[in-house]
Image (tube, rainbow, N blue to C red; front, side, top):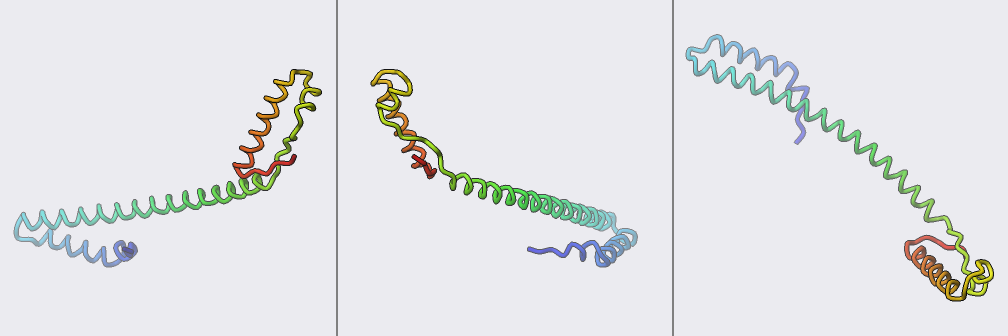
Length: 130
């Protein structure tokens, strides 16, 4: 629902307030005056609440625009990262034994771990240079 706040705050509001003020002054009964005063106060409260609500909506809209910008930048960053390739050499057991000077068991474990890392990296959608 779209409310024309300017109409509420414009000439019509002042005319209605004037009518209420006259009613309050000219009313024959205290009960009628009290009702008119309550209506006037309640109307002012509603208009103030509407203004606050619209201010809050504008603030939230601005925050939404900022978050959309952040999401767009981060999506570009993710795309850049996904376009890169990780350089993770696949070595043989013999090469690992020669480079490290450790045992065959160590080299086999290292190669198995390296193979698992390559598999997991690819599963995550990242390219691997071998």
